[in-house]
Image 1 (cartoon, rainbow, N blue to C red):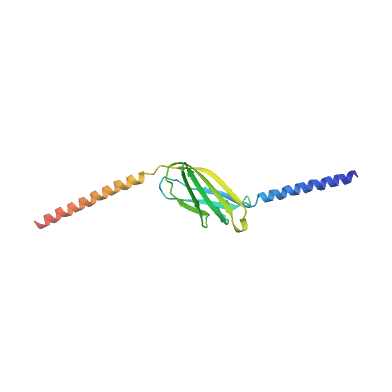
Image 2: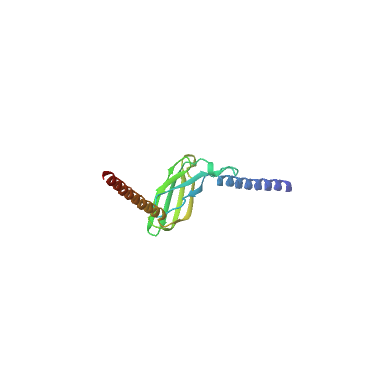
Amino acid sequence: MKVRRSIILFIFILMLGGNSLVAAEEEEQGIFISRVSFGNVHVNQSTTYSVQVIDRSISPDEDINHLPPVDAEVTVSMKLGNHILAQTLERTDQGYQGTIAFPEEGDWTVVVRASGLNDFAGYEDEVEMSLKVQPQDRTLSFVWGVAMVILAAGIIYLMLRIRSLMKQGKK
């Protein structure tokens, strides 16, 4: 009788352990937002950004930067004060991309949501992050302004020089 109880207890423990293995396998399925890339962002300048959504069940030795994107609907919402921007991203070979121009500088709250489609239907992932939007970069504008002044001065000098040469040739 004692042996029989031990066998029943052993089988019960195996059954409990088997359920936890199934639960662990289920956690490894689905989708995963592995990268959100904005680069340098300045106010009122168009910025292209990307989001990578991959299969959660990849093996640890795979390079996640070179995996194809999974089928998903990827939406991004950005908020700063009363400003709220929202987009659904386009799928590319490298992931999902969008283009945006932020109307105000500051620390924007960005929420990226991915909802799986087709084979990944029912799976979701969400990432929330802060994004620093810099004031408009005026360095390039200043350089272009100086270049235009130098070009205009050069053209005026050439016109005056040609005019004086023409006057000397008529004498």
